[in-house]
Image (cartoon, rainbow, N blue to C red; front, side, top):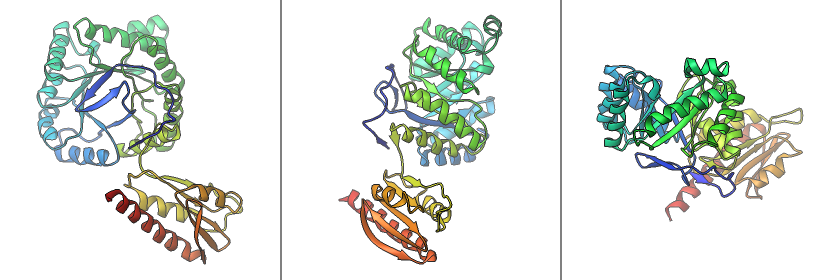
Length: 367
């Protein structure tokens, strides 16, 4: 991971730690997601946890729906070093069992976990295991009395709901907490986090819930999370797309990269194509993206097909190609390495130079 010095100033919060991963305070904005496997299927869940962490996920949440899911947690814990959070609703016994199995943190709503005695037992178990808890309020889970009071799941209703849940933990002397206020409405999500940040100093887990399919969900997440992060709000984030959760991670890092907060892997700059494009720019960009999938080093690759802006953009990149009519020019840091003639030769020639660049980076890192 690469952190930049030009990131927006962060809203100050206290720090919580999940299996050595610090959240809030001076720690980086953390990227997390949630498995969508059946938690009872240990092998499938571990495989997805591995795919998520390979993609850069720093904290993984698991749904714990019943006793069978809770019984699988010990084997899952034994199979990975990733920080794991158990997502619990309604049944306090599952929260206690998850912590006993070695799960590192909980996501709960104390108001729906049961009686006062049930909350007592969860807090006691969390204290015993040094496990933080996330108070997670969604617009769909706001209490009925607050819906009536505010005329719906408004930002004010969500914040009051969170403060009510927080009070249940605070009166028991538990403060190892982070908070989320999620809605599928971007404006409501932004308003809720802005309001809550004026009232508490707990780390904020930000996200737009039920954001949608990859394209729509990525847009909603980028707008909502981008605005919050630009204002310094957000200590850990989850992008919630419908589909493979590994996709969430790539979108999350691109949001952070766009705001100059964190970077992971290469940035690929490619022009949108227009009537001036005279090479197979789409094929070249897709080939480059496929080759760099899984590379974590931070550098910039320019794949340009425009004779107007291409050469200038490529010169700014660590490595790049600017294509014209049936030819291309390959650059490294502004230095022209050579010209490639023949449209069929552009992809092989640039990929060969890209492989050389990656090899040199790897060798220099070992020196």
